[in-house]
Image (cartoon, rainbow, N blue to C red; front, side, top):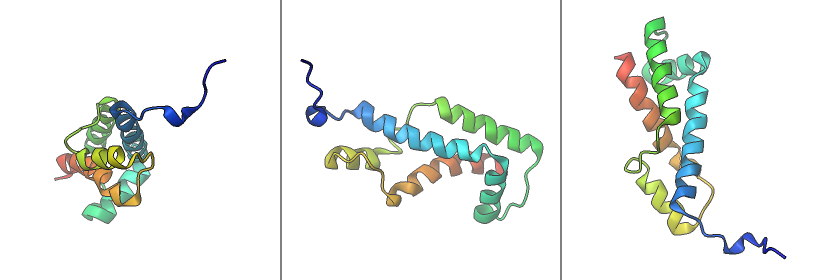
Length: 111
């Protein structure tokens, strides 16, 4: 009989990066919705609208982010935390890391 006990399963760096990538990609997908994008820009940058061309560039960069590997340097504090604590949940306090990556894309196209 095959052992199905997962308590001995090792948590790997690949698992950690997959977890982070999934959360990052969910956030990027949210921003592909123009309503969410414009609402965020209005709230964060006091930008009420963007030209169609700028929106297209933002969406292209967000789609590129979806297929990009996780930036290990950017997420290193979170990677360390997950691996040190063997935690599979990402806490609310780490949310700014994910938004910082999105903000980097947005700021490139709105100023």
